[in-house]
Length: 288
Length: 288
Image (cartoon, chains in turn orange, yellow):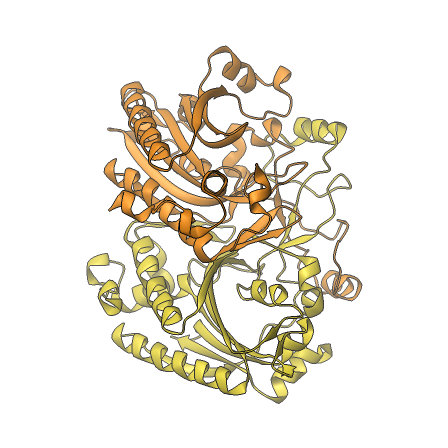
């Protein structure tokens, strides 16, 4: 199925797991994202642009590194000391691979692993009077054993729509998004189905968050083809509300997010319609 | 001058050196970038979207780490071995700062330090028949001793326009961009001036590239206020052409780039017009 990426115009793949996009493929990604943004606008969502990093301090309440140590990518620099830098420049000035040593600074940041994490710590200890809708498109980073162009990348674009409020708001939000998604995949001619899923916890047997997901399914994935999850709806219940002390009225806030992996949508579209841009659906007309 | 960022709506600053943008400030950034994109379109430039990383292998011909070891930020993960990951999860599951140890993988990637670096290795060993115009907006990363909101950030947005061809093409390109830039700063009411500059080489006395820049000035910065460089024009002569074996006809290709630090433009605009979005210039009308 995926050999369609072999000579796809505008796709420049690096075997370490990431891609540059140009030409019609980038236009397709941009047009597709505009569809998701139009849904966000309908919901009155505020758009935000986040940095590459998220501070470990801000992820602390989630214990992210306990659940997903295998996925994390850290941002590290050298100690800013003349002798360190000068020795490093001499040894590694033209290196292709560098083994980490003691002259590196400590890690205080990971590269954003999921777009919506940026929102919750920002709202810490806030009390919301009404449901809040948020959206962002963020470059996300996940270390994996193997990568495949557009299907599984070390860095990729994730568009998320988020609702933080109470159960009613979250249920209507998920319902609204599912309806839009189903209409869109129809318009694009993509064959997909919904499946119950769990997040890729490192040690599910000993992770209370993993157990909670098994006991009461909260994640549905939109599957294209054999196993390509191109989107997901995630009911967090009051998990983030309690982790960060976000309240809705008198209760811990309830939240949900709907996430789209943009490169995977591109793959679903080119797998369905072929690698020739002339045969791709005219997405811009779907929004207008 | 810069206290205007203290309560700027839509700016969320992290003291480790990076910002999230929302609301009118994000709209301003988007509108401003659209101006630069319209110039790129005028030149027939192709747009590209790059990943967070650039491989050390692809930077090797530049000896980037010899010239700028102090600025580099590396992307690192843990060794993908069960014992390593499980010990790490136990020790650091909720850590705010982690000292680097031997169980980290080797570094093969830096976080993009300058947007246009992505273009040259792609064109390695190509022979161009006519000048090529390229553009991208890329999150760039530079480790510094101190950071200031919008003025000096660990990660920031850089829009670049690039020309690769011969001397004539490069000179017309720089001339076109300078004219547009000067007209734009006029329209925005920004007081700026051009200054000859050099890149922040780690050890300029022993770096042949630094010496070359001093002997024949190639970088001009557009300075706002005391010392805020909001843009620059950079004549690379045949430096990238020779490093990567890119030819224009029979000769090594000559290149130049024009770069804009988007957050710094925001700072120049709010420093000039104040922090209230109602008093900001209507940038969208400048393009239409």
